[in-house]
Length: 242
Image (cartoon, rainbow, N blue to C red; front, side):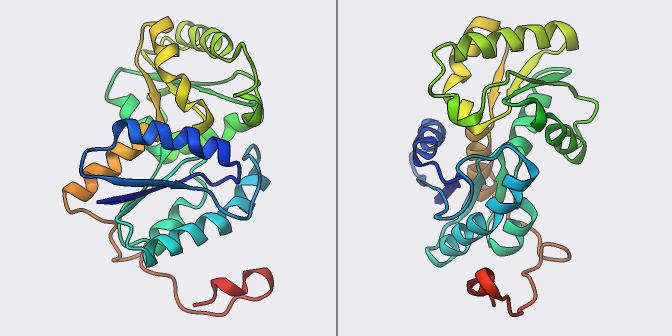
């Protein structure tokens, strides 16, 4: 099977980190590649960033369909463009927030999300409600490290651990969800220090996509996720016409 992991931002170094996390759980028969769009924001930390990341992400989905990709991971915790990607892709598409929250709900009675900036907390709460985790998600907490600073901050593990420990106590939760694809490489270190399961959505989504493909399951096209109706697009979106 061929899985494509899409980092919706344009930062190649983050894409490499995401790929390492996905490859660590890819099965022996899985061909995996990780890509990022040629256009879009360098990081996604606002609704504006998220909206402008979607065209480039959908272009990667379309290219993947031409290349025969069997399933996709959307590796941004806002799950940008997930519904649109499911309209385009023949195989399953899983967002990392979606996967992480579902996995966390299987590991304890409640989970807390540790994310990057405080301004992204609302989006995480929105997704928890969408994915039926409104009761299981007991808190969303920010460590106030910008996405592109995660690799540069020498104290990043200590800061995430400190926020995570406070979240466990405050929320009385059992599991931590890392709320950014750029935190994927922190999972093992944070879990070792906190002594609880810590879920990286990149790894979880990769395993979920593999499992859906193995089961022969794909997104239903009966109603909303049917392919979009052909029509013309203009201006910078002219290439998206169908």
